[in-house]
Length: 623
Image 1 (spheres, rainbow, N blue to C red):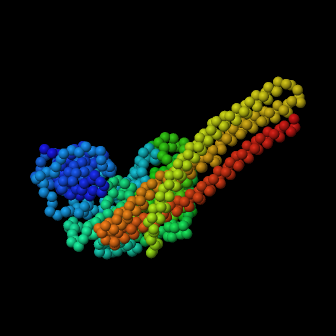
Image 2: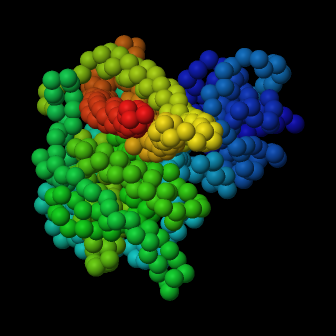
Image 3: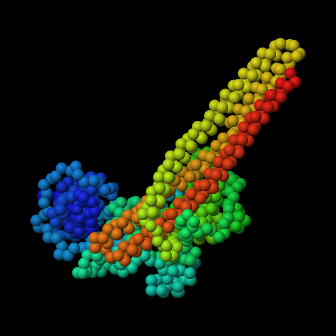
């Protein structure tokens, strides 16, 4: 008998060669072997084409109805395979199958899948279940706080407590309900219910009632399609859910992130209380009676002047929280981890310099510097108030303003609309800029590293060879016992010593000029690695706007609904352009300062070389 499959979810074809599916529909398969996550088959309407393998359940034995048990579906990679190249195989839909009397709209909110043991790959993104919730794993390359050999986690950090019993913590039930009441006995001051949903949004998420079909036309039935790749940054960041009007949450006054219009376009509102933070005194400490060792750094913020001590794992945890919370903000990368040699002096010094660069960028960012979790990191003395430290840590981990809800916290200029074509042009220009900058930074880093290696080894060795040769000549001249040649012999020997000293200067110089340049390049390469994801979120929002406009032109979508999608895209555009503006500001500041430092150190270096040569020259005056 022909191989069959049962559709587990609705699927709407978007590309040539694909076919649409209805939930519970029985299909004939051309082959059980999936191709890049897609199967080929014929649906109940006789249409033949491709559909995602994860949307169906293969039927290996005849079953009386759509609710029978079946084997698990084939794994899927969620890749859009171009049609064509498949040999046609004769197949026909089962004659006994009758299509449903009424058409089920696609991706019904809160619609439960049919009874089955099948679990689609990536269960964190259930298809057909209303708003697709993003995975809790943070963005930017799937970064997660390390638990490796570099600063292992311990009981003091990973306790089993939660914030359920902690007053004032996020997720403790103190937020008001939709009707204005509060589960904690009253509406908390300074919190506002924000939602992107409306009667014009993509369906209701609050119940399982079937949708109402309007006989007046097809406008209300059109929907903006979801990304097929549920693991894309646009989906995981919550950007898709926000643009489609599915975000809803409580936003506190202090959580508002303001974008203002500056002379060059959108920019983040400046921090009214700027500060800096020093990182000094790296100290090796032990615990558990010497069984565990770690390096502790002393941090002193200028706005509190109260020192706190942090380990690298604390920085690591903070970075993970920030990268998860701010999908359109470039959180600077931390210095790289190292499994061995963590207590060597050179490594500790290099890591401290990297942490200083990281802290400077954090403190100078108008949004990151004022973030609650960052301020908790800077001000809470974990060693003296462990309870407050853990409470703040758990509160940050239970933060609800992540994913789609993060975009609710963005406050944009009132009555300001962006030209989406101009936005797209700026984004494309910045994308080209970051690609070119990344290539040139990589090249400069390679060149500087190679030049530093030559100075430390090759140049030092060559200058010392010259110095040794001069001393050899002096020793040969000393065989002449004439008194009047003694001064010359000493001057030539001094010249040899001068070249030895110059060789040492070359070996020491990279620490003064080239190493700081490479540290800066490493930091900016981390920023540049962040921007593809940020740009992807912005591009995804623009794509949804274009699709909604096309539906309006075709008479399939109401203008108000499309306008809502565009307004939410504008919110993301404001934030993205503000972040790009900040990046260019700090780039000019940092590279100006670093190039000045580099050239100053080069001048000082060559002045030292000149001084050595002049001293050698003066030795010949008395000969």
